[in-house]
Image 1 (cartoon, rainbow, N blue to C red):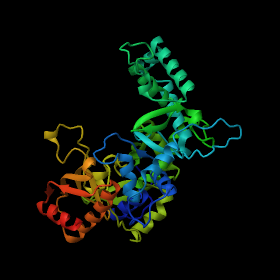
Image 2 (spheres, helix red, strand yellow):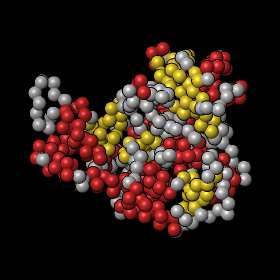
Image 3 (tube, rainbow, N blue to C red):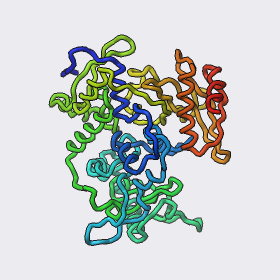
Image 4 (cartoon, rainbow, N blue to C red):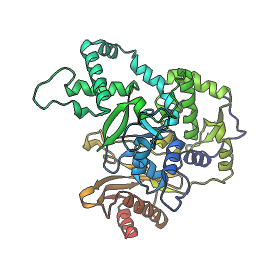
Length: 433
């Protein structure tokens, strides 16, 4: 990579500061409960927030926003995605009549919550799902039984307005064609992927689908862009949210394949949308990185020491801070890994560990389980990274963040089973009293 625009390498501390500022993970929390605008702004700032079904604590999308906002009303977040869960009224004046949706669910880095201002840039992905290149998917779409299932599911949604996969179960033991719930569920997923259906609501996290044009607010721009325009827009958004990264970490942010991404990010670099910078790394080497030109003033302030991360918080394993592959190790010497899908005997840290971020450093992690009936947060193990000592300042900062985390989960008690180092458990429990 060329086009370095810095006379000398910038300190790693400045690069980290820009990353954390771009991710809204640097400043101390402000007093007061965040309102809907603050919640929306946090999603818009990072671009999109990943969804996940695991719920050892609150689900990932809720934890990701807590990391940036502190305790907030998750119902406000849900209203931004689903409004009141109903469809748009059939009006001729284009009035949304209270449709509060400003976010939607679709594929980006993975299944994500995304601002509706970006809806049109998801349309090329929807078109690829409608016209798949893979032989298996093409054959599935051409199968007469599947065509009948798709038509039947769409007719059902048109007639009933909203539908969920459970609506297609049979209770008489017979298995018909499109009434067989398994094919119908596949059909629902396909129609969602192609954009014909949209997730209008969730009940107990189960998807409820509606015809897209009856769900989206009327103001949403559905003008299809070219595939190149969509890619460039999403790469631009990703580069802004990443702060500082390597050139080919940018497409990681929305799971774009690297072969088509490479000439586009190189063009962004050549045209000056991206600016090359050299960064001092912990191992003493200097690495070529890029920063979006809109973040250059921020980088200058960080290099001058005007921006310094001052937040202690905990991060979801699916947090967007970790979407640039390898940057966790390169910038922080911290290996973020989700071990939920590993057999228990070979897990190094635990099932669902949350990293601990303190003042710009990733200093540890813990493996939690929320025992909802008892309103107890159980930490199976809390770890500090090698070389991090549990001094009074660190323990106090972790305890303050933990108080907020407990409140966010309506937990009134905490149990810590193990800690590394061993003295951390005693000190943290004392600080939490």
